[in-house]
Structure formats: C-alpha cells, structure tokens
Length: 386
Ligand SMILES: [Zn+2]
Image 1 (cartoon, protein in one colour):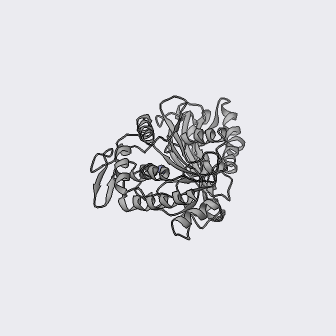
Image 2 (cartoon, rainbow, N blue to C red):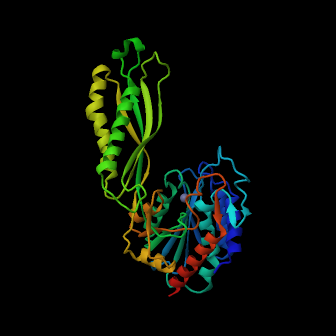
C-alpha cells in the first residue's frame, strides 16, 4: 500500500495548481503526465474544443479485458470572497488535517489514485485499472462527457466506475438528476402611467416563478418519495432574477434562472415541459395580444443525469466488500457518476473526506481519510490481480 506521506506529497503538488474551473488545468495535467511517465504508464489527453483544458486517461493492466475506472475531476470552485486562514493553493497541515482548495473535493482522491500507481505496476493485473481525470466538473460535469465519448470510440468496456467524490468512504449509489434553465421574458416598455399599453416582463416572470414554486410544492406534498435522500422528493427552485430599470418604466425584459433536482421516480424533462407549456399556453397568448414581439424563451444551462445504481450491482457489492460495509447511501450533490452510468458503466461514488468541507473557506481533508482511501485502493488492486 502506498505510504500516506506519498499521497500527501502528491496532494500538495495538485493543490498548488490553481485549477479553478475558469482557469486552464493544463499545468496540472502536464504534472500528472510527467508523473505517469516516470513509471512508464501511457496516457491519453482528451482536450477541450478550445484547447485550454484537458481530460487525462490512463490504463494500467490488460486493456482488452473489462476493468475499473477510478474517476476524479481536476477543477475546483473559486476562493473568491472566502476568508482563508492560509494560502488556499498551498497545502497546510494542522492537527491531522490538510488544508487547501480541492483537498476534499477532490484532489485528495486524485492523489490517492496517483500514489497507488507503483502498487498497480508491482505485479501483473488480470483486470485493468483506468485512471480518468476530468476538467470542468464544477461547472456542470462538462469535461468528462468527451472522455466518456472517447472510451466508447475506443471500445473500452469497464465493469464499473468509482467516482471519488468525498463521501467519507461510504458507498453512494444514487444522486438526483439536475436541469437548470435561463429564462428570458420579453415584453413591451412604456411609461408606467400607461401600464396596460405595455407588457410587464417582470410581472410575467413572477407568474412563471410562482408556477415553478407551485410545482415544487405539489412534489413536496404528494410527489414520489425516495427515503434514502435527506430531501426525499424532487425539488424546484429559482435562484437568480434580473429585471426592470426604474419604477416609472414598464420593464420590457426580465431574466431568471431556475432548476429541478429530481429523484429517479420523476421525469425531469416532463417537469421542465410543464413549465414551458404554462409559458406557451397561458402567458404568451396574453402577452402577444398586447405586443406581438413579446414572449418567453428557455435556454438549458446545465444538467446531468441522476445516478441510480442498483444495490445489487457487482460494482456496489465489490466496493462494499472491499471497505467492509453493508450500507449504502444516496447524496444530494451531483457527480460525474450519473454520466458514466448513462453510458452503460455501473458506477459508485466513494471517496475520502466529507462534502461538508467542499466549496468552503479552509477546506480540508483528514489524513486518516486519505489512509482509508489508500487501503480501499490497495484491496481493489489486490482484487484486480486475481
Ligand atoms: Zn467534486
């Protein structure tokens, strides 16, 4: 098993790269490539269309038989406006914890995987381990989509995928699906004293938001339930709104953003359609009767499929056996696992650290968590030898 000191050394290097999603991650990717080169492990870069970022994929062991993917993202959320006690891009150890942006979410897992490389090479594997490092996870699981597409093209058919988001090494078999939309309401402006001659975009937006809220309330009251979630039903929420310039002007534009987070029992597209149908059938006829140029448009902003891996799936059973746990959970946050699963690769989320630390100032991971993950990977490697 990789000594935890080695994992910490790698984590320090990874945290040192400011891979906030708005930045390039190529310096980090080059560092990982260089690391893999030292062990003679071949790797494949899957660049983004603009060339400023890349996924990285590497296979150790016999590529022609099914194995397991260890998947982690390389980007982190911004530190803007957060009060950090130390430099967020310099790993700092205090009291058995390692502080740094991404320490928990999820460079800690990435470091564990890289630290396991010498063990993976020490004796021949009967089944391969694939390392998959993605970009732009934090802004909608963007990068991994091309990585998954390239696996399909290369006919890589893994038995399962482990996505190492922080779960304190508990097996997570489900998360909700998400869709978010930007809505633009176009009305017609006029002086507010002549309000009926205009189409008030803010008011129509408000009616649409009220509709979204009503759907949320209906789902909360009588929607389908999945008791494994903290919030056991599908939710809808409006988070941003912009509109209007002055009280004496009827506003001709209003934009807002809303999202659905759905359990597997609900079809997220049906819910989105219900909102769009209300705009089309109830609001737009009224608006157009006053001003033909008015209307409502919906732009899909981001989304990812939910994860709903059966507890009986081989990869779930394997992960539980290797970590000596009988239990599994579902989590509120989204991950890349839903996309792997949608591509036909049974997936589990399990990784070191806790999501409570993620995205906050003074994000940290406990060294004990890295050790637990190291032990899990050690047993996975052993499993892949037989
Ligand atoms: Zn993450």
